[in-house]
Image (cartoon, rainbow, N blue to C red; front, side, top):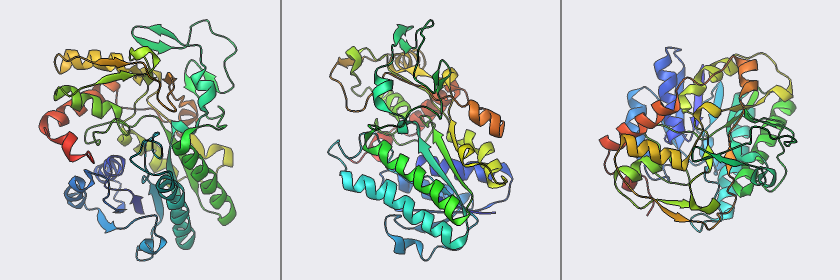
Length: 358
């Protein structure tokens, strides 16, 4: 099968291309990228080494897609992945919409033209902020958790995490809104034009080679900054670092992606699925600091209790649906992901500078 990966020189795109190449499935891999993200150029040589055919293009410009060859499937890994995008002063709200929503429209038109399947890599941040911010969390082992005896949780939420039926009512952040709108359009294109479409909502993706920016890869940023003795700060929620996120290595998506490429027709309700490391992979910033102290060395973290826009205390995705539909389980444990990031950080002492725009 000929597969095109958009945003192929980003961390997720490169990781998936490598996973496909190493799987032995013998797919023909193509990818395109606009190379505007700092650090993306570092992946060009690796992608060529594994046989990926690269194209330069910006998915915001429909004409950039006109010279791409016909493909069987598109995996859309191109996006501005920051929940603070459009409000942090580094990117404009219009740029965010053009990248994440306008780019999706152009990719869907490309798929319509070539009768190609489409997989959108979406995010946990499409879920409603208000009920998540109001969760009755308690502190246990330096991390927020849902109380053991809690009852009356919002629909779609359990101790296993946030399920696909959880509210996506605004506000979800500008970033979350662009991804949610992209999901809806992708599914509508699939139904209207008879295209196989899947929406994979991912937890926090993490691993070696992830660009070192706090707003795009907190696990990679934290470990790289800790190793370099850079200033680190717990922000919001009292400045204790108790807020919790799960983590998932992108290569663990490969078994489900392979099944989606060959999947028969599915009901629309089964085309949107959570993929996450789940509760077993979840940790707080404070727990990540404890891991760094034990495995990297001593460092100190300051505190700032000022709330940040769109922040929530606890986000763990429930991947039970992925297990039911695709017999999927994450295969890379959180300690393995952290160790991989640390090894990469030691081998690339200038990584924060390479992957930072400032």
